[in-house]
Length: 129
Ligand SMILES: Nc1nc2c([nH]c(=O)n2[C@H]2C[C@H](O)[C@@H](COP(=O)(O)OP(=O)(O)OP(=O)(O)O)O2)c(=O)[nH]1
Image (cartoon, rainbow, N blue to C red; front, side, top):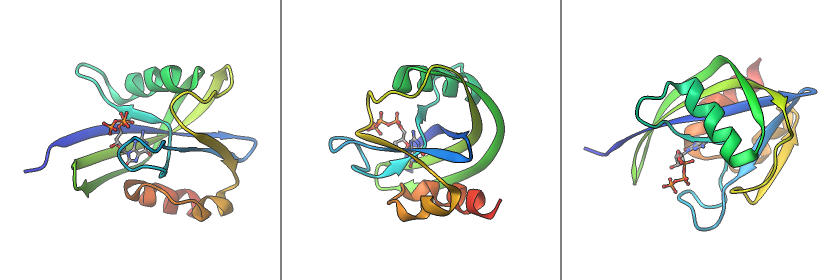
């Protein structure tokens, strides 16, 4: 059995653009695009994990809204259970710390990026809405 990894991702939308972030070369899934976020720690609910991760990674504050999608994807390193949530920026502006690049893209443009496979159902939902 592969290990279960519980992950949350933030779909941050501002002026109709979605924040997309690119993973670095030394990470698992190098250079893949993702929604900022990370692993849920013990005792946290998804919303708490997401606000913590966004503060750590992007140095800004978000308010977590409705869930966009939940998916389970089997990678070679484990089973990633990914939940994505709509988020609103409430303080600060995203800064690059861990990611090598961020982009704000319109819904129609996000498919042009090379996304982490677990993100595809979220992408499909965002494009369809
Ligand atoms: N944050 C985030 N992680 C994602 C997404 N899609 C996806 O497959 N993942 C994977 C990548 C990682 O394996 C895991 C998230 O863990 P993390 O953000 O703490 O990753 P990390 O690079 O710090 O740690 P590691 O996996 O390299 O050990 O989930 C996504 O949209 N956002």
